Length: 196
Ligand SMILES: [Ca+2]
Ligand SMILES: [Ca+2]
Ligand SMILES: [Ca+2]
Ligand SMILES: [Ca+2]
Picture 1 (cartoon, rainbow, N blue to C red):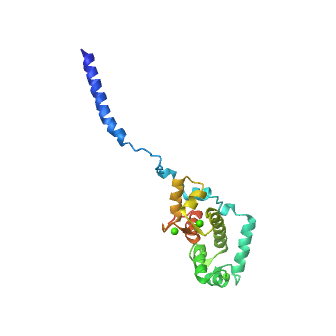
Picture 2: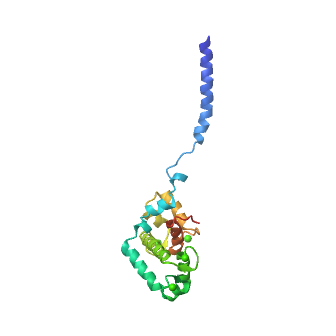
Picture 3: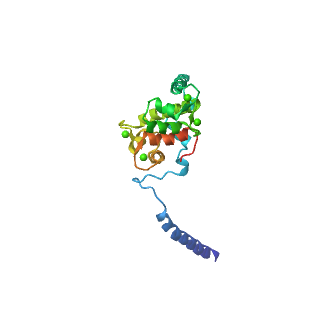
Protein backbone atom coordinates (compact mmCIF):
# COMPACT_ATOMS: atom_id res chain seq x y z
CA UNK A 1 0.00 0.00 0.00
CA UNK A 2 3.08 2.24 -0.01
CA UNK A 3 3.30 2.52 -3.76
CA UNK A 4 0.16 4.63 -4.33
CA UNK A 5 1.25 6.95 -1.52
CA UNK A 6 4.72 7.27 -3.00
CA UNK A 7 3.20 7.92 -6.37
CA UNK A 8 0.95 10.53 -4.84
CA UNK A 9 3.88 12.17 -3.06
CA UNK A 10 5.96 11.96 -6.21
CA UNK A 11 3.26 13.51 -8.34
CA UNK A 12 2.66 16.23 -5.71
CA UNK A 13 6.38 16.98 -5.64
CA UNK A 14 6.63 17.00 -9.41
CA UNK A 15 3.53 19.16 -9.54
CA UNK A 16 4.94 21.61 -7.06
CA UNK A 17 8.26 21.64 -8.88
CA UNK A 18 6.46 22.27 -12.12
CA UNK A 19 4.43 24.99 -10.44
CA UNK A 20 7.60 26.58 -9.10
CA UNK A 21 9.61 26.08 -12.20
CA UNK A 22 7.34 27.36 -14.90
CA UNK A 23 7.04 30.96 -13.72
CA UNK A 24 10.73 30.95 -12.88
CA UNK A 25 11.79 29.83 -16.30
CA UNK A 26 9.50 32.42 -17.82
CA UNK A 27 11.23 35.10 -15.77
CA UNK A 28 14.73 33.91 -16.51
CA UNK A 29 16.72 36.61 -18.24
CA UNK A 30 17.10 35.87 -21.89
CA UNK A 31 19.35 37.49 -24.40
CA UNK A 32 17.28 38.72 -27.29
CA UNK A 33 19.07 38.84 -30.62
CA UNK A 34 18.71 42.60 -30.93
CA UNK A 35 20.10 43.33 -27.46
CA UNK A 36 23.81 42.68 -26.93
CA UNK A 37 24.70 41.06 -23.63
CA UNK A 38 26.12 43.44 -21.07
CA UNK A 39 29.85 42.97 -20.42
CA UNK A 40 30.77 41.81 -16.94
CA UNK A 41 33.40 43.60 -14.86
CA UNK A 42 35.96 40.98 -15.82
CA UNK A 43 35.45 41.79 -19.51
CA UNK A 44 36.62 45.39 -19.13
CA UNK A 45 40.34 45.57 -19.83
CA UNK A 46 42.66 47.34 -17.41
CA UNK A 47 44.32 50.59 -18.53
CA UNK A 48 47.56 48.70 -19.22
CA UNK A 49 45.64 46.15 -21.31
CA UNK A 50 43.86 48.94 -23.21
CA UNK A 51 47.13 50.66 -24.14
CA UNK A 52 48.72 47.37 -25.16
CA UNK A 53 45.70 46.38 -27.24
CA UNK A 54 45.86 49.74 -29.02
CA UNK A 55 49.49 49.03 -29.92
CA UNK A 56 51.36 51.14 -27.37
CA UNK A 57 54.86 50.06 -26.42
CA UNK A 58 55.49 53.00 -24.08
CA UNK A 59 58.84 54.15 -22.76
CA UNK A 60 60.22 50.60 -23.00
CA UNK A 61 59.47 50.51 -26.71
CA UNK A 62 61.14 53.80 -27.65
CA UNK A 63 64.02 53.45 -30.09
CA UNK A 64 67.45 54.82 -29.10
CA UNK A 65 67.20 57.16 -32.11
CA UNK A 66 63.91 58.60 -30.85
CA UNK A 67 65.30 59.06 -27.34
CA UNK A 68 68.41 60.76 -28.74
CA UNK A 69 66.30 63.17 -30.79
CA UNK A 70 64.17 64.06 -27.75
CA UNK A 71 67.33 64.65 -25.68
CA UNK A 72 68.71 66.92 -28.39
CA UNK A 73 65.43 68.83 -28.46
CA UNK A 74 65.56 69.25 -24.69
CA UNK A 75 69.03 70.75 -24.96
CA UNK A 76 67.75 73.29 -27.48
CA UNK A 77 64.86 74.20 -25.16
CA UNK A 78 67.27 74.69 -22.24
CA UNK A 79 68.41 78.10 -23.41
CA UNK A 80 70.77 78.83 -20.49
CA UNK A 81 72.16 75.27 -20.38
CA UNK A 82 71.53 74.70 -16.69
CA UNK A 83 69.96 71.27 -17.28
CA UNK A 84 66.46 72.49 -16.47
CA UNK A 85 63.77 73.92 -18.73
CA UNK A 86 61.66 76.52 -17.02
CA UNK A 87 58.18 77.52 -18.13
CA UNK A 88 59.62 80.79 -19.43
CA UNK A 89 62.26 78.99 -21.49
CA UNK A 90 59.55 76.72 -22.86
CA UNK A 91 57.32 79.64 -23.80
CA UNK A 92 60.28 81.53 -25.27
CA UNK A 93 61.13 78.56 -27.51
CA UNK A 94 58.12 79.71 -29.54
CA UNK A 95 56.81 76.27 -30.47
CA UNK A 96 53.40 77.01 -29.02
CA UNK A 97 51.39 80.00 -27.89
CA UNK A 98 51.64 80.78 -24.19
CA UNK A 99 48.43 78.99 -23.16
CA UNK A 100 49.32 75.80 -24.97
CA UNK A 101 52.94 75.93 -23.83
CA UNK A 102 51.75 76.32 -20.23
CA UNK A 103 49.40 73.34 -20.56
CA UNK A 104 52.07 71.11 -22.10
CA UNK A 105 54.63 72.25 -19.53
CA UNK A 106 52.20 71.34 -16.74
CA UNK A 107 51.60 67.89 -18.23
CA UNK A 108 55.32 67.27 -18.63
CA UNK A 109 56.44 68.54 -15.21
CA UNK A 110 55.00 65.50 -13.46
CA UNK A 111 56.30 66.36 -9.99
CA UNK A 112 54.97 69.93 -10.37
CA UNK A 113 58.14 71.56 -9.07
CA UNK A 114 58.11 74.16 -11.84
CA UNK A 115 61.15 72.62 -13.53
CA UNK A 116 61.08 70.40 -16.57
CA UNK A 117 63.91 67.90 -16.34
CA UNK A 118 65.35 66.04 -19.31
CA UNK A 119 63.86 62.76 -18.07
CA UNK A 120 60.42 64.35 -17.67
CA UNK A 121 60.63 65.84 -21.14
CA UNK A 122 61.83 62.63 -22.83
CA UNK A 123 59.22 60.49 -21.07
CA UNK A 124 56.44 62.88 -22.05
CA UNK A 125 57.56 63.04 -25.67
CA UNK A 126 57.74 59.24 -25.98
CA UNK A 127 54.30 58.79 -24.46
CA UNK A 128 52.51 61.62 -26.25
CA UNK A 129 54.08 61.10 -29.68
CA UNK A 130 53.09 57.43 -29.62
CA UNK A 131 49.62 58.31 -28.32
CA UNK A 132 49.11 60.84 -31.13
CA UNK A 133 50.09 58.30 -33.80
CA UNK A 134 47.59 55.82 -32.37
CA UNK A 135 44.93 58.54 -32.18
CA UNK A 136 45.52 59.29 -35.87
CA UNK A 137 44.97 55.61 -36.71
CA UNK A 138 41.73 55.54 -34.72
CA UNK A 139 40.38 58.81 -36.15
CA UNK A 140 38.99 57.37 -39.40
CA UNK A 141 38.10 60.67 -41.07
CA UNK A 142 41.17 62.49 -39.68
CA UNK A 143 39.18 65.45 -38.40
CA UNK A 144 40.90 65.43 -35.02
CA UNK A 145 37.67 64.39 -33.31
CA UNK A 146 37.52 60.73 -32.31
CA UNK A 147 33.90 59.68 -32.08
CA UNK A 148 32.61 56.47 -30.54
CA UNK A 149 31.81 54.72 -33.82
CA UNK A 150 35.36 55.37 -35.07
CA UNK A 151 36.81 53.96 -31.88
CA UNK A 152 34.62 50.85 -32.03
CA UNK A 153 35.43 50.37 -35.71
CA UNK A 154 39.20 50.65 -35.29
CA UNK A 155 40.02 49.52 -31.75
CA UNK A 156 40.47 45.78 -31.17
CA UNK A 157 37.61 45.45 -28.69
CA UNK A 158 34.22 43.82 -28.93
CA UNK A 159 31.67 46.61 -29.55
CA UNK A 160 30.12 46.74 -26.07
CA UNK A 161 33.58 46.77 -24.45
CA UNK A 162 34.80 49.31 -27.00
CA UNK A 163 31.94 51.63 -26.05
CA UNK A 164 32.93 51.41 -22.39
CA UNK A 165 36.62 52.01 -23.14
CA UNK A 166 35.67 54.98 -25.34
CA UNK A 167 33.75 56.37 -22.38
CA UNK A 168 36.94 56.26 -20.29
CA UNK A 169 38.67 58.54 -22.81
CA UNK A 170 35.63 60.80 -23.21
CA UNK A 171 35.99 62.22 -19.73
CA UNK A 172 33.33 64.91 -20.15
CA UNK A 173 30.92 62.50 -21.83
CA UNK A 174 30.10 64.73 -24.80
CA UNK A 175 30.59 62.03 -27.43
CA UNK A 176 33.72 63.71 -28.74
CA UNK A 177 37.35 62.99 -27.90
CA UNK A 178 39.92 65.54 -29.04
CA UNK A 179 43.67 65.01 -28.62
CA UNK A 180 44.11 67.04 -25.38
CA UNK A 181 41.26 65.18 -23.62
CA UNK A 182 42.62 61.86 -24.83
CA UNK A 183 46.22 62.68 -23.81
CA UNK A 184 45.22 63.45 -20.23
CA UNK A 185 43.84 59.95 -19.79
CA UNK A 186 46.51 58.27 -21.89
CA UNK A 187 49.33 60.15 -20.15
CA UNK A 188 48.16 59.00 -16.73
CA UNK A 189 47.65 55.40 -17.84
CA UNK A 190 51.00 55.23 -19.65
CA UNK A 191 52.70 56.22 -16.39
CA UNK A 192 50.75 53.63 -14.44
CA UNK A 193 48.74 56.34 -12.70
CA UNK A 194 45.07 56.13 -11.84
CA UNK A 195 42.67 58.24 -13.84
CA UNK A 196 40.94 60.33 -12.72
CA1 LIG B 1 67.37 76.29 -18.32
CA1 LIG C 1 59.69 68.61 -12.59
CA1 LIG D 1 36.93 61.64 -36.56
CA1 LIG E 1 34.80 64.62 -24.68
